[in-house]
Length: 248
Image (cartoon, rainbow, N blue to C red; front, side, top):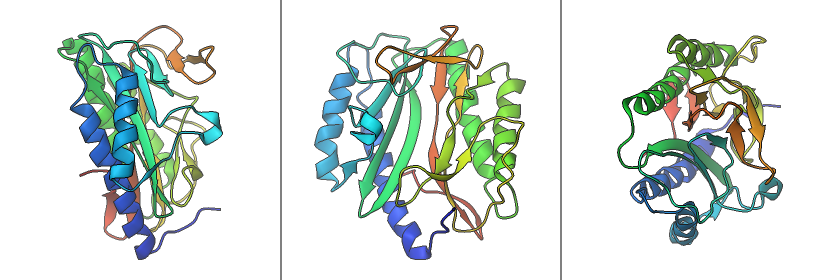
């Protein structure tokens, strides 16, 4: 059952998601060649109590860290490690918090130093696809309209969308209905109503859409080794249109 959020719920969700945005922005400023994703995890460990929040991911389904840090061909759920980042890499930072009983969740993909024009275009298309999906999060539309907008734009630009992972509702739980695929058919025919809050998160591959899970049982990588970019916002459907909660 999809829970419609009240005005008070939305205010609390806004606070939780702004904490996510603030911490992601801080992490982004620490991305440079030679940095390790384990250092980023340590920074999160310091920033969470400073913001009065609890990490949403650590321990969830057994995930071992607060931050999902996915590098290059890693699509999602990368586990922080001591591997250093290199010039020209890209890194997806997926992060969530629990604050005052409500969850925040967002992701972005960041270049490490200078990246190629081809790689930068992948990031541009993936982020633009997110905002095209957000634009469809209006009353009277369906989840399918979000999915269609993302897939058509991504594929028109020569990339593919991952099928194995999808967006989701968010609120008092991190993962609530409905699911938000970035592809179709079959399209999800759930109608959008004011009060729904959706975590919209296209995962865009430079090659094919297929992924595989590594031996750590978490890290998902592109099956063909191509680069992948991931962007996510938590968005409220309101009478006045989509409201992005997870931005500064």
